[in-house]
Length: 572
Image (tube, rainbow, N blue to C red; front, side, top):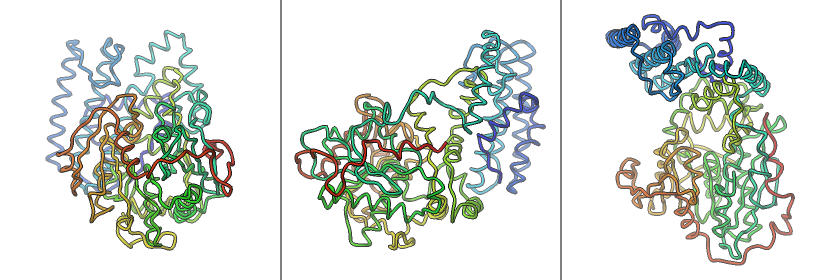
């Protein structure tokens, strides 16, 4: 099956300057559409639609199409509820209103066809995703010739908006990605990632940051935070008011954090074993040496949670149990349900990656960014095509989107191992199936109380999949597991400080085995889940002791001030 890449579609979008056929196709009736994109997609994968179902869909479509054009004939404007067409410019001119209405009708028909396809669930998911990508790309809002807002701007500015749009488009073409924010407004260590601290250890894979205490006393056991190696750690330290890192420091914890390297060609043979042994396990041991504590609170976010859980399992097989507690935020350990990301993973694609970068090479950060943008193409791709290029508007500064654009490469061998053994084959959850860093992996051997968090609207780690970790960890003592569900998505749900008094979260002390049953008995609370997490950390943080006077120790002296050098290396 073909891969539908929003960046590639964005490149095709530029062909409107010489060819208007793409947007004109959306004015054709169903008989033409049924033979176009859907036919190609179905042919690629050998799927089919029941002829009777197709006839019914076409008949329903033609009835709606007929009503639409009858309204057009009597100048009755259609109702447009889609937010892409909310501007009065779409409603004040009949041709633009009917262009949008026809597009929406055709889009509805194509998605109905996709839903009617007779195929396996995985294949059907791929079809739905591919069709949705094509539909999003073909919106009349994405083309100057059919976007009345852009046309009005062009007239109002006497052509200046188009000139600026073309300039911004050419600049983005040089960068290889669409600008989502004013990147010149931010600098790592200056106005993002500003929590005070020092780098106290580094090797070729990571720098270890120890943050400066903000309280006179701290919990005896430190907190080690392991963020994902996809993108940079400072999603946990964007601004003082929404920094997870600073919040933990303010609660009286001695916080250490792993700042992963942004790999280049010198690290193109690094493996998953290296990320576990030389990365997570080394970080655990260094924190133990600096603080003279045998146990510490351990934290993993997203892929960082998968990495640190694997590391703790490896150590358990060696007879080491360094975690007094384990926190996992939006983390997958059981990859049975990987949500929409499943459309990118099958044997053919994994083999292709293994053949190209499985032994040596890099997965480039821009490829990852493109993948994640495609999950919300209207918000993260076409929205900016319209504003930046068609209207010539400069994107405003936004720290979250600056972080989102600050991508990281991944070593090919590490990435391919991860892709096959988690997303494709789901081997990590199977006791003893994998050997990592010379030891068998059995997540059930991790001996630590856990705090597991999922986000209700997460499209990367579905919350039910995050909940599934409760069946792998402390399986015989489920009372040691605590699951909390937060509102919103993968990032916004996590970065929800108490002071904002936003959103809500759900708790249920009876974890059980079923996510739906857990939610049925859960209680919703207003505000942030962070205080729940803080109480959990305090419970397992040990007694209060005097805060350390300086970072590191004689063996591990300060190397440089936080956030360090590694996080400032860009993949562009």
